[in-house]
Image (tube, rainbow, N blue to C red):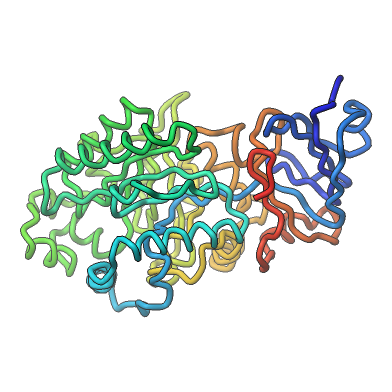
Length: 418
């Protein structure tokens, strides 16, 4: 096999994620994609030509995928102390947002992208509060799914969606070579009407975009929909939201599924207040051969709000794809998925390091419709890779990865160092 255009990476260990760690491993890269992976001597025997970069005492793994992030709020780190309630936090962040200019948002996004890259993230799902900020935005340094986050409490759903779609169309027209991909997000059931959910879903079907929403995030949201009570109910009723979808005894998840507003394939952020009836409904509505239900867990944001234990095992038993995100620095102190993996494991020691790494690589890639392309080192996958110091035994590779606590110095995207 000719390999004149191939580049070899050799490392003490390669963790492909879809398989077990490989000692004295090698990855062959051609045209920005992985051509081969295995033990160095075995791969070299098949690919005898091509330059070799020896990474030495490092472990090589796929770049991490942050499945839920709000880069707009990067400069809010430490500015909102843990609140007494989720509803109180909404008031605090809305007050902070009123003080931010468009220039502040742009600076926060740039700072957030830099923080993601330094923590080994090569792909992010970013929910953007200002759809129009795409205009003039520099090319993201990492692979990005950009989702306008829409609320229609004060503006018709049709106008909101049209403006978001227009902003994306303008960007695509002027940036034909951008690596940016797109989606759309009705913010949450308490801020987005059924009409907004329906219109976002219609746009996504037509454009092949990702769909995401916040769901079952807080006890106040659960009380609002099931019982028609609580602080969030009173807040939203007070500003004129129609409350006729509240108080019917249903969970918010069940209500949205029954009305056809969400379906498997949506990226559901948080899911902290899902109940046993919801897990049963997930099992019953899981499509054969279609996309699974996908839930994004943000462990340190979860801890910041003091939520009850995240239902990891119940979601797994329901066949749900669980991924990891960081949420924003309005409820977290870092955009670092290694820290999220450790926080999840601290809260639930039964979670293995191998499973947690999959929740930051393999699983979000599947949720994004990029299985085999991202989140894995395998022939045909994009060469989005990171390397971390590693001198332990090969059996400790997953634990060493989760325990990584420094900036990631070596990051590659599409076969190029960034």
